[in-house]
Length: 319
Image (tube, rainbow, N blue to C red; front, top):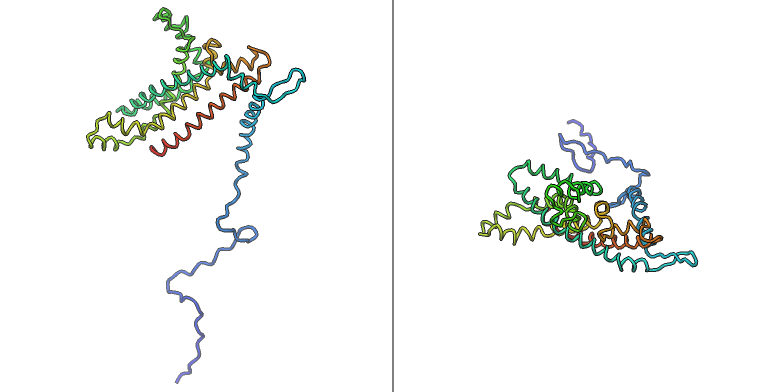
């Protein structure tokens, strides 16, 4: 009978299966120091944004702080020192300066309303057009015209619709009482670049209107007018209001076009600020100009406070 040699007992653990790949060994810890990183810990990335905040502090924070400081500072002629006062702010909201601020707000509101209506109608015509080439032409032209403003635009209007302008002499517009150097002339000049800007602004919102909505309304017996009254316009309202607010801010901050075209003949806050800074009215009114600039900044912040929620609501509906 052969001798029975004692075999070693199998090692504890899972029995390897034939043909199965052996488990990979644990990866070595190559992190610095070999210390395990805490779960959920993230590397500090704030140093990356330091240049951005430094740029904001130098290019925006410093001018804004200087403006606020100057608006509330008055030079005492007796002692030759500056003192804190609200005289500049109160002066910027009274008299001729209040008239200029009111004139700028009225011009901005009127042009914003016209640009919103005209630009929306043009954009809707482009969206519903069966010719794709028309959309490309309108979008390209709007992108160019929306950036054509300032002194070049003023000179173009003066050469065309001025007192001796080509169109004025050709159609004898001077006999009708039309004057380019008036409130009406400023409205025409502002609409030249605001309407294309509104077209570019509202086109994505009109593209967001789904055709299924109109088909569903038609299947329920709704007319085209009922669809726009109950579906289209309510959905587009945040985008239209946001575009109108943007048009108001654009017109309110425009300076070069009005300065070259009408000068000081029209009461506008931007022209009054330039005159005060240059000493064209009274010498030593620089701080008063800073107070008027502060008024414009406050109005711009209010415009942004209205526009941002409207953009978010429009993105939620049409996104």
